[in-house]
Length: 237
Image 1: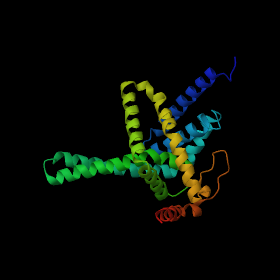
Image 2: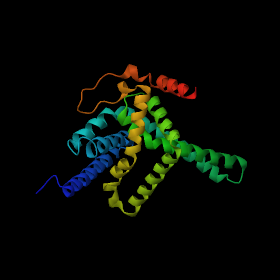
Image 3: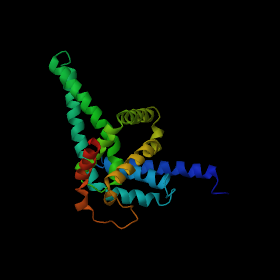
Image 4: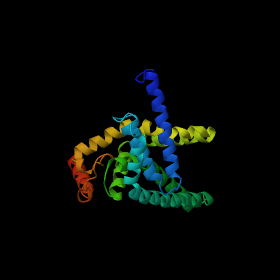
């Protein structure tokens, strides 16, 4: 059997996507670990399944990436859960009093905030998988990408909703849909992240590959906001 044939490569790719999706599901079960699990999934899809790894070391890469981003990922998950609660409360309050001006304001504000947060959520896990930076910087970069391409960001949210609906219709789709979604967004997003790395000289903040020795970048990571502000000011001149 020719293991380098296109057919075998496609089967291997599908098998790896299923394995990565199952790992994502398993490590997302505690709920508070959803973000680090998503980050590890994105890293595996981008670097191992479709990247230079080509399926080698999938389990190890997922575990190492998950462990590396566990603490900041849990904090981000908790923050997003709190935001989701307040957004839901705002929308529910506005819906209950939609005939009043205050109710309409609540509902409209809730929709705007939900849209902003929703587009940011798309980028949080990929950014976390790529950069060693404080949570505030991860959020800021996610917001930057969301605002830089608003139409594309909304499209990503709609694709996420469509894929979630496909899981509702056909539950077995859960075995591969998470990895498929990462593959859909990774191309344009990787170009954007590489561009911001080069434009702002953020090479020192790029997360180390799991197999490489971790380096201390805590001090330099706090320069991210300053570098991005400097770049933005230059663009305005």
